[in-house]
Structures are given as C-alpha cells and as structure tokens.
Image 1 (cartoon, rainbow, N blue to C red):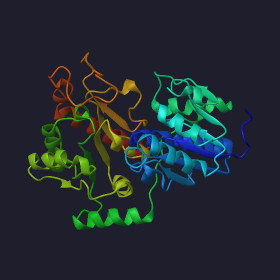
Image 2 (image 1 turned 90 degrees about the vertical axis):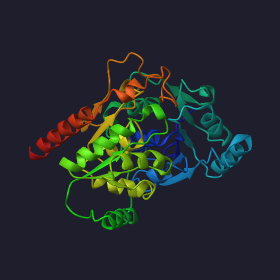
Image 3 (image 1 turned 180 degrees about the horizontal axis):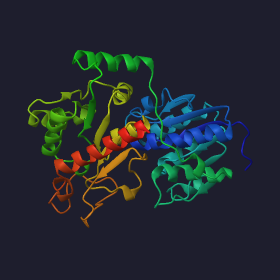
Length: 354
C-alpha cells in the first residue's frame, strides 16, 4: 500500500506508564520524518497526563481498556470512536492482539506493527523487534517500515508538564517548608510487582542516611504505593516527607525537576527521571537491565546483585519470589545504594564543572 502523504497519524501505546515514556522518542521521530497532518496517541487513562503537554502530540485518545472499554463491547465502542476520527495511518509499538484488532476494526487504512505481535496478520507492514536491544531502540525499529534508519532517533525519552503542575509542585514544597535552594532527593519505593521492590528496611535506612548527610528527602508514589511508603516513612522514624498520593502525574514531574537525584525501583519513576533529565539510581531486584527496560541515560547508576543466577525470574518480576528467599531484594545493602548515589553525584558535579 502507498503511504499517505502528511497522514492523520495514530500511535497506539496502551501498555504501562514506563512503556508510554519509552515510546516518546518514536513520537518525535515520526513527527520529524513523516510531517503528519496530525499526530494523536492512543493510551490509557493513567498514562494520558504523560502526553497531554508533549510538544509532538496534537491529541491524546484514551482507551479505558480495563473499565468501560473492556471486553468485546468495549473494544467495539473504542473502535467506533477511532473510526470517527478518520486516521489514515496507525503505528503500534504495543504488540498486543487487542491493539491489532482495535486498529483493524477502526478501519484505519494503513497499519504498522511488530512481526512478533499475536495480531501481526492484521497489519499491512511489520518489522522485527530485537529482543537484545533497549526498549527505546526496539520501538524505534518501527521506523524501518518507512525506509528510515532508527539509530539517529535513539535519544532520551521526553515528557512535559504545564504551568499548573509547576504551581502545584511549588505549593506542595512550600507547605512542607521545602521551597528553598536546599538539595532535594526523591525516593520511590513502590512498584506494581512485589519482587521489583527493594525492602522497606532498605529504603527506610536510605531515607535516614540521605537526610543525615545529603539533603531533604521526598518519599513519593501513586495512591497504590501508600502502604509501602507509609511503612518506609514509619521505619525511617519520620525522616523524609511522604508525598504519596498528594501529587498527580504532572505535578510529580515538576517535583522531579527540583530533585538532585531520584532513587527508584525498576518502575515508572525511574523512566520519568530519565525523561526529565534528572540523575537516577535504579535498584533492580527480580528484573535485570538485559530485558531492555533499564534507565536510558548516561546519568544513571544501576544497583543489582549480578551474581544471582535466578534473575530475571520473569519479565515483570512477580507477586512472590519463586525460591522464597527474596535474595535479589534482601542482598542489596544500604551501602550499595549510597555508593551509587555518591558515584552519580560526583559524576554529575564533574560534568557541570566541565
């Protein structure tokens, strides 16, 4: 099929928050290379704020696939919604069967996706996804369908927020008397997957050490992380300020911009820090960077126990340790993470001086 000139382009990414962040280099590449008449992104309600202010995105279309978009009826309703918007080209970094079906049912006349997708036969053109590459580079490989070399577009992910979020972040910091030039560190102990989380004891000790010797600490996370962050805050003897659930996603981005450094598990805050150009110490427990989801930035340090042969125990970790030892979580010490903090602060300071 002939690729439409200046297409009405839809990029379909309804994965996790991290998947959406790692798709942003593709959005910029498609904007630059195809000069679309419009560029819309289909994503989840949770991820929509990541793209609401993105300079390369004209519109965000929400697929509430876990609520009223669920099941066959929800699929058909969402397909009709997409069909009414007259998209001429769809690109699908999300390799699910549901995504392929949705784009086909919407009647989008030119559809591009991965050969490894269960719905590959519903795409007009496909490309192979390199399992050995970083996810940013895997997603960018879709450019090959358009005769483009993806390598020049392999840049740091990017997300943006608006002035309202900046004001909300400033008000939060003022409420806790943190609206000063003093160094701020953000610690994010949560994750959807239990085996991706470093221990509560480890994070509590880290918060205490950071507050004693480095600066003030914000303990952050989404509403679902509240049990974990409360436990960390309690075991840290009240050290740090627990902002969990008090900042929406855009406000959290604005808070990240105030941080000297972010410490996070292998989860969305790690990718958000990268996308805002803030140094990150990433703690990998059950998962490994070899899966392709490590921090895509030179301003990052990974802390992990490389000697454990049981890692990774799954693509996302899991709800429990298969060996019931939790060794990948428990063998990481506070000194390991602080060493990463020191190394990153030294390297970023040297870079600033040069």
